[in-house]
Image (cartoon, rainbow, N blue to C red):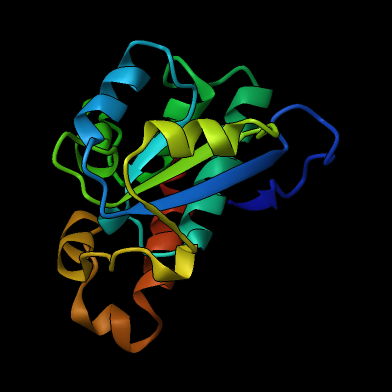
Length: 175
């Protein structure tokens, strides 16, 4: 598990720390998704091919946490808001379809606000797959991400795909 603190929030405050697990070679994604849908699992579940970099997750978690602190969640829960914040679209169902883990996912990213000591063992027991570092996750689908975020070739001459995606995530609610 890798962790980070959500910038701008006191580390001892609720939901100010996030744990991130990456699972490759997942064979039971449908079961994991069912546990999430049934409320037995309180995490953010992401398809790792839809995530360009850890910084995208960090920004989405920050935006979700800010929305929570202002009583402005668009979704019903903080972990769901992270998926919504990753998306360039304002359509919740499309956000989950594109970024959430689905029944056929073979590589998953799991994020949890305020991870506890027992979370690591519980997730390893539930998810049939190999736990790896974020740097070793399945590669993201750059062509699909460019299409979803509407990033053209000329924009990539000025910066990286990650930079372009971060810009889109950051300004979605402003534009």
